[in-house]
Length: 353
Image (cartoon, rainbow, N blue to C red; front, side, top):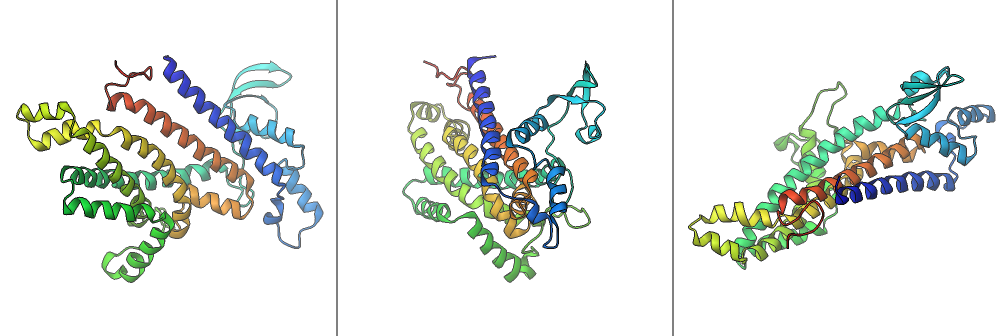
């Protein structure tokens, strides 16, 4: 394994460990009592105590942290005769004596304090919906951003170029939640009879049927700002590339303008765009928190906000950790993609001399 990959993996692992520590101790330092949101006003001290014991909230912080690390770790030591064996769904590797076994399992996030559902199932479903939303928005933004940026660069200083620059400046200044409100009101309410779109709605209806039309407005709301950023970046990068010697050489060989732009100029102008995509994809997931609430789109952001409102600790911790893992994986994939996009970049992280 090259030094470049080892360094990236080390940074990724360090970030995840930092997130685990920060989030856990942040909620511990706040000293929030989640049982207040789980119980009504008529609940007595005995009931609250039972809830605290059930979720281990009555233990010292270091005991809770040890248990939390054990839940997250894919490899841990368990009592094979414990009553919660089925809950963890682990598979024993070998015994350690006194009913102890070394076991492997998927990370365990506990159960929701509000619904009692497994947190992993809630996060998995929400993450799937959010990923579909973010990927759709990014594909939409990449396609139109690259098209607008390339056209503006090729026809520099023309009316088309000025219009693209003006629209991209406006797009950058519009927050996703504001776009979501406008799109919901205009296309989901005022023009509903024409568009057939809903003001609110998730990817699946109450009967579990896929409803793709509910994906259109949230994806548009999330994609507006990335389109503007990608348009500006691709335009600036294309303007630099179009004056390189190899572009003039390609024209001299008799290649068509379309072939030169697509096969030579655009590909070599993608590096800053790829960097932007990695950052904006992470921002899409963050912005989706607000957009999902506005459209009642039941994704990771929707589940997280609802968990925060009800002090549902297991869901909050799992949501933040899942989002951090996604960011780390995206950035790692983007770093490796530079090798394919720019042949001057080697896997060692050094440029060709």
